Image 1 (cartoon, rainbow, N blue to C red):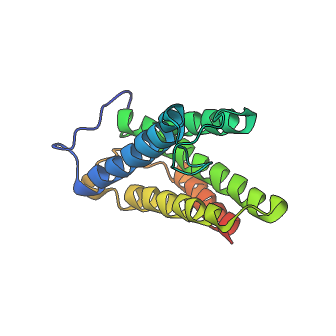
Image 2 (cartoon, rainbow, N blue to C red):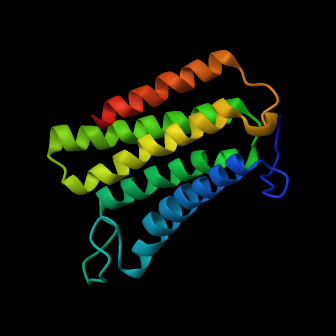
Length: 163
């Protein structure tokens, strides 16, 4: 159950789709869009049009660091495909980000632009939970029921944060 790099040719389609989602969210959104593009003038926080204002103020740097940490967590299942613990930590990361976004919306009057990322946290955590639940082809050799229960509670809490 240790290190095992995702191999789409040897995985069931449900797990291949999950890997694609993890690479898109953890790799492209969290690393490229949030951590690399700001160095070239555009960013999700300030609009995509390049401008001459300094990009990396303290709030931007914290946002970038937070998303780099999320990327590390969300890319972990790509390297540990059959480890339930890694899926649990990934689902908890979705809960934490959804809670953070909810907090910003409810306590600091964040714009409604924050709602789509919160919705994605709900969708992605549910997707991961369902992929593990159905465990197509018995790909994960040992699905631990206690870890699965914590995953279910975490996904439910992610949806509650969205409300």
